[in-house]
Each structure stands twice: as C-alpha cells, then as structure tokens.
Image 1 (cartoon, rainbow, N blue to C red):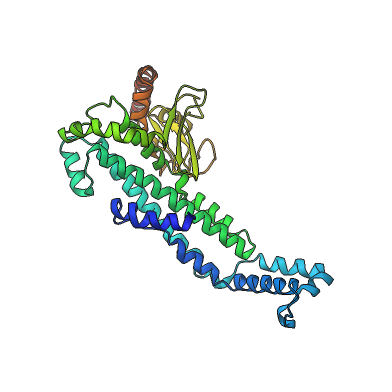
Image 2: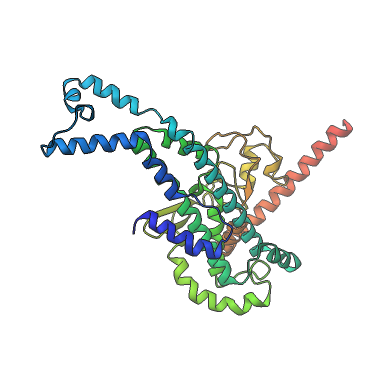
Length: 373
C-alpha cells in the first residue's frame, strides 16, 4: 500500500476515532497542487515528445527541443539552471499553506501530548478535573491507545511533509523544499525531533511496567481493575514499538514505526555523561540533567532553567533563546526512576546535597549584597 493510501486510511479511521479534533496535512491536495505546476506540465510534455521521437512519431517543431540541446550543451545547462529557481505560481500558495498546516499539526500534537501526560501524572481532584476537561478516560488501556495514536499521528504527518517537500524539489529541480525543511527545524516544528515523542514513549513504557508508583499511575479503582488486562493485552503490541536500553554503553529510548521509521533518543546527558536525572529538554530538542544545564547557564539548579537569561545558548548547538521554551520531561523521569532504581536513589542523594549547598551559598551572597557586609 502506498503512503498516500496509508495516510488517508489512518486519518479516516484511527485519528478520526481517537483524535476527533486533530488537524492534518492535506497530503493529496498538496500533491495535486504540484501536478498542476507549469514546470511539471512542461516536464511531462518534454518527456512525451522524447518518447514519440524514439518511436519514430513526428513531433511539431515547437514541441521538440532535443536537436537544439544536443547541438548546444551550454544552452541546455543554462535552461536547467533556470528550472532550479522556484516557481512563483506554486510558491505564492504552496509554502504558506504548508507552513500553516504544519503549525496546526504541531500545536495539536503538543497540546494533546501535554494533556495526556498531565492526566497520567495527576492525582485526586485534579485528575477528575483533567478528565472532564480533556474527555479522555484515565483507564490504562484507553491512555495507551490514545498515546500510541498520538505517536502515529506525529510520525505520519512528519513523513507526509517530507514526501511533499521531496516531490516539490523533484518537480522544480530545486533545493527550496530542503531549505523549507531546515526552516521547520529552526522553528522547532519538526515532529520527529519533538521532546513530546520521548514523553509519549516514556508514558507507554510506564503504563506497561509491572510495578508503577500508585500516586503517579494507579490513582483510582478504575485503573486498578483494568491494569491487569491492559498489561497482558497491550504489552506485546507496545513492546514492538517502544524499547528502552539501560544495559549497554549507550542509554537509548527507541521507537520503530511499522515499516517506515526508526527513532533512537539518546538518554545520556552530554555534560555529565550519565543517564539524565531530572531531565530537561531545551527548545532546540537537546536533553540534559537539570543541574547540568543550569550550571551551563550559570543559574542555580533550585531556581530552574526558566531563570536563565533570554540570550543563553544551548551547550551543544549554541542556539540562543532555547532556555525560555525549555520543558521538564516528567514521564521520562518516572521511567528512569522505575528502570534504574539504584542509580536514581544514589543520584537523588547527590543532587539533594549539592542543591542544599548551592542554595545556602546563593542566599548568603544575596544577604551580603543586600546588607553590604
């Protein structure tokens, strides 16, 4: 089955049933828009004329350019270079519409992922309020279905955008599609690099865990009743998609999208070279320990990454302004606590001691600065 058919089936079945208000990239519409492009039509006419000449069929002079191209290769190269420029007829409608569609998909994906994570981690009255607000049943099987559908939703739309841009470059003989893809990455609109994919993967693994802290997952009797059934019926299916490896040298969280994509997320902090503790994802997508990334920005860890200056840069890619849009990966923190219990408790004691010392020194400096002695 071709991708266009798979995409249509997914949108009309799973996405429509579990994500009723979702936005989608109109894959067929953008493909049809490219087929109506003047350059595409001209390419089809030239290819048909070449086929006719090879079969010995007469072609009108205005439709045949092979003899001129053979006699003047420099002119032919110049004509090819002209086709490398963007098509105004397409660009006036194509890229603005595609950017609008991608922005809608990213906004919905981010909003829905945050709601699902908050519902999973909430307890007591807040859990009930979130259930009424999101209209998502908090039982384990349903959350696993919604989470898996959200991951498929993000991957399918990301692949649709990539195929559309690849088709654009093929039709126009340009690199504008590749440049637009780079623009999406700079805008943090590339779904396959979104930290929310990591959160959804950690959520799926936490729901499959045989021992999950009750305040975080099994907060009501409904979850307790359905958890055994969910663990048996969904574990085999979900393990085909999400896996985490903390035994080898590289600590990774992996996702395999059926027959299409494999995503590997490195869970090792590039500063301390340990498994991320109290993980934070900066706006650029790079993941660090909270204490490490705060130290890189010269900010006390107890104040958090939001206290960093607006112009502070990522320690890896050196992109500025990424601390303002940073997010805490709470589901990933729970997964590491469950999977690496011994490491988690050792690191927790170290971090607690370091933060208390750091806070004491910070307030002593503030007191000296305020009183002048």
